[in-house]
Image (cartoon, rainbow, N blue to C red; front, side):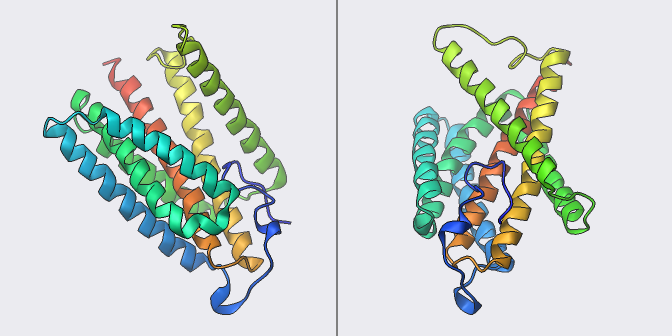
Length: 246
């Protein structure tokens, strides 16, 4: 049985709904890596374009909101209809890039260099965990998966509660401030986001081993991108909290 993933787009039952394939029609790790690279390039291109518009004086808030909404809708559709992933994932990357570009530009205007630091840290964590996973230093055991899934679900609930309370003008203590407790919370969230990468690696590897259909390469790339985007955003938030204490 395919291993669980804390990433909601990479569920345990995803591959079980599809027949097995072989040869050119089957999902491969190399193919998924290629699709992930294409998705990342599209996302970065969209983000950079939005970034430039911001520093040229344009109001990119509508782009950020629109990108977030469109990205969320496409993520839901892709999660339930994996066959559509080859068509929806590139569009998702454009929408998500608009959102990330706008958010990153705003952080950069306040704290020069913070986005480059966050991007480098995100890539560093990604490579470190990939090496650790391939060398078996970290193994995606069932207990490990369950722990990461539980932690990820808990974080999602906290963010949802914070959003709901915010609509009534109530701020959740510590979650968004730069106190030592607030920084500690951000560190924990970054760690959980990073550990989701291990589950994603395991999920993609098992999907390739079980002969999932070729279009699942786009689906696997999409799930990996969701985790990387989350990790990057949490890195930016953490660095911003630390910088605000100086």
